[in-house]
Amino acid sequence: DKKKLWGGRFTGKIDPVMEKFNASIHYDKRMWKADIMGSQAYVKTIQKVGLVNEAEMNLILDGLEKISLEWSAGEFQLKPEDEDIHTANERRLKELIGPVGGKLHTGRSRNDQVATDMRLWLRDALDELKGNITGFLRVMIDRAREEIECLMPGYTHMQRAQPIRWSHWLLSYAWMLKRDLERLSGVIKRVNICPLGSGALAGNPFGVDRTQLAKDMFFSDATGNSLDAVSDRDFVVEFLMWGTLISTHLSRWAEDLIIYSTKEFGFVTLSDAYSTGSSLMPQKKNSDSLELIRGKTGRVFGRCCGFVMTLKGIPSTYNKDLQEDKEAMFDVYDTLLSVLQVATGVISTLQIHPDKMMGALSPDMLATDVAYYLVQKGIPFREAHGLSGQCVALAEKNGCQLPELTLQDLKSVSPLFDEDISSVWNYEHSVERYSVYGGTGKPSILKQIENLQSYLAQE
Ligand code: ARG
Image (tube, rainbow, N blue to C red; front, side):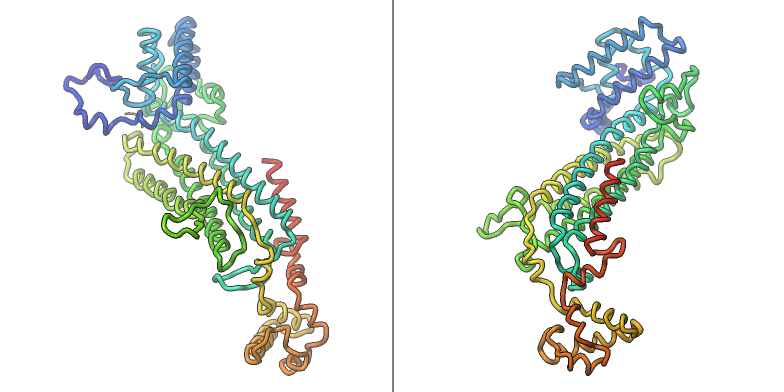
């Protein structure tokens, strides 16, 4: 296996099964651009310390440029011995410019190289996800503003609880995703550190300027310890954990909409563009888009869980187990990207049925407001709660709704009930009592929209 990058000390041939088992090229070729960017920066750095002269550097840069063009044109020819993207690009470089290509790797190892490539790749990928989250949020926030008049039942334990604004429901998820954006900024900060110049494990013996190297690739800093740097995959784990959490939010969002779109609820109708039918039952329209969003969460967490398990027993510095990082990272990225695109499509085309939402409100949902009515007449809340409960029981006994109780009925529960109780029998009124910061009243909704928008504007 003299052809291999590491073939010098080998006399025997690799088992073809092992060769396939060992290779990562079929998925890590996705990082070709990052790999070339890393090499471009590295050759400039080693030129400064005299490891290559200017002519050699330019030759290498030209070669790298050609390889880059081949990749973008889809013309790069993989060879069976190309183990991974780093080996493939270096093999091609030597084919194009001859043995001088072999100088590029001086002082570098695939260990610091792969860690650098992954950070470069993930940095762009996270930027793409960020744009998609922002797009989703804008649609959610726009709807919240446009549909602010629409009331619906709010639920706890899936039981009708209190009337809320539909916008309040929309914005509840916007706040979750805002936190995801904030957490993402933290992840990006730690992704954006440069491990190149750490070598295989001990560092770089040629005095390369790692700070400059980091700057050349727009990293904010260079890693501080070479042993750590070559095997640190915390940035991947953080991404996977972050992905698990945002998936969880979108899964709950999807679950709510699945429920709201059933005939039993009828609050919303999913566009045909995001639904599918049944091969057997002609009447069916299923919310497959939302179910897949919910389902993918298991996949994302599975990737996260699996990779953390891979890491837990690894001894110090680089071990090949780490090659498992890439499929987890790519798959979670691909999954999240499509989840966000579909979620944005669903919410952009969703039809709402305000009449159905309002129709699902029932007067018993005003029982809390009845208690507050008594509180305002000076009764301690605990007692007021009990008295309101008695009104509910009385209505149930009389086979009527709360507002249908006569003033006499109400006075039999508490003499403090008066004509002004009629103002409580109004859902709009009820909702507007909750205008405190963070509540479901209109002023709060408008404030929420303002806060979320100014967050997005400074992002
Ligand atoms: N393909 C390898 C990976 O993804 C590159 C690093 C290989 N390093 C090594 N010492 N074998 O991790």
